[in-house]
Length: 329
Ligand code: GLY
Image 1 (cartoon, rainbow, N blue to C red):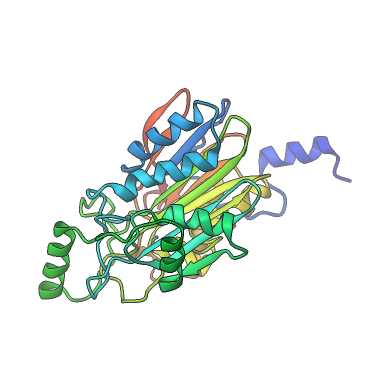
Image 2 (cartoon, protein in one colour):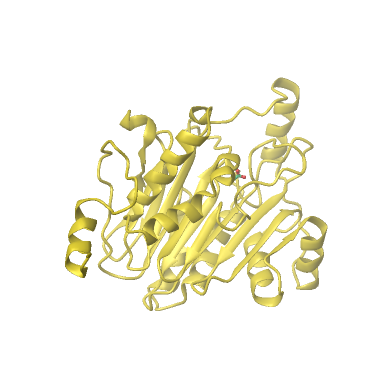
């Protein structure tokens, strides 16, 4: 018979019924002693976290924090993988995907949305004002405009120049696995936050893969792929090549791993290992996961080195590099 005592002992030595990785990655686990906590993907997450932190440190709601946080990247023309300034698809159109979830498991998302600078706020309205979870394309645009959003030109001159260069020189999409590449072709911002009342929420928003096929939608608006929140357990989100995340329902898997006793880092690590086992050409792509538990523990893992994530807590503000599967080989 498993008593509470033996269960806890066995959890600390290895988790019952779970296949933990059979080799050791460096331990990259950050205990959460104090709430609130906010984490987000990539270097542009630092500025986004700063805005989110202002809300969280003022005892604000995690949902408001993640929405306001990722709006910073959406509005920044220097971030060429999100919102305004995003790299267009193969036909020169900027098409956006976004997703938001709250601590009650409510969700809203938009996909293939054009002309709207803040898709995350449209996703929140889908969650709060409609009986649905996802609106797409023209329907999403119509809904946004009916709710006071204005059509804007999202293709900047810099993004247009890159597209023109791509059209004449490259013509095919080449996945970018070196995430240190400053051109950053798939740097979705995903943000997870738990507030001082232990309410955990998440958001992600992206213009998707640079020069993607017209009509392509990635993992970011798909609940359980680009983002998943379970208010009793924690939250997870993804960045990188969405097709790999969609095929493995990565963020849902990370949260389920945490439910079964893994730390956020172990949960991300196991989801990356799942990709390496299920997707034969995984090494040609980059995927990164971030995870946050309801108690404020966090962690991250990626396929290739170079995936940085931004953290803001009362004790630490800045960037950390996730452990990667490649580096551990
Ligand atoms: N992760 C973003 C995308 O693949 O569209």
